[in-house]
Length: 170
Image (cartoon, rainbow, N blue to C red; front, side):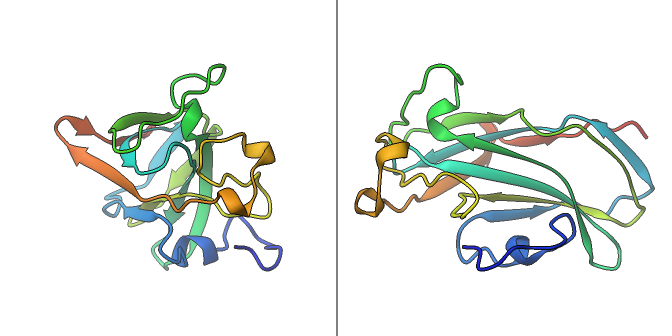
């Protein structure tokens, strides 16, 4: 959880590098040449969990050849809204479900030769967001007494092809 404000949020790596067991990080291979990425990113994840609801936060970074990073875009999704923003549906614990992250902000970036992309997926525990205690109740009226720890599995197989789609222009 945050202890202080971050002055340079687009280049600060503390939350990508210190997940404290909360999340997963994926890195691409280095780009063989400078590549333009312009547009909306889409991420499809196939996941299962042992709670009826949780929140997901997804951040995409460029990792420059010197190791520094730049935040490119981000998205958030509450599990109960995975099928419809207008009709919440709690998750059946243990079921493998598809989660489409389509709310990333549009961006344009010339990704440098030898840079990599870093995708960070977490369940936020933040002073800046409404707290979801993962119990499936009314989030606005839940408290710590309702809290449940979420255990989440991300799938990457032929039946569950989790994938990041990039709008590559060249």
